Length: 123
Image (cartoon, rainbow, N blue to C red):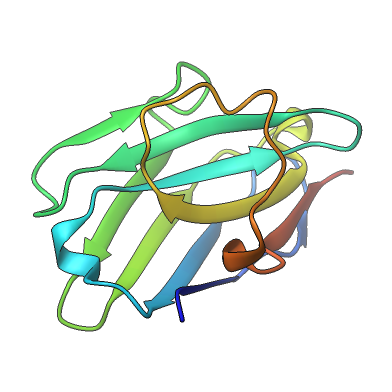
């Protein structure tokens, strides 16, 4: 059974940092590009970042460039997102997923993504 469990979300002040983690199981993790997507209340899913299967190539949405860093550890089937200089508009539930190269805006989280992890940025 494919399962993706995100963790590490919290409530932080603007300018703060968080490191999100994702534990993957049930599929050949090291053979898949992976992504972080997020969903703010009342909004569709939004692509944040993705990384190729080997971890050598990373890509970021404009809002994430220079602030977020995606990484992975294929030895332990883990995906990470280091988030620095967080902004109020980063408030969302964050999910990890296989990267599909699609428009996520009209989608809803898949059951296999689990509950994601909530990031709240407020002062």
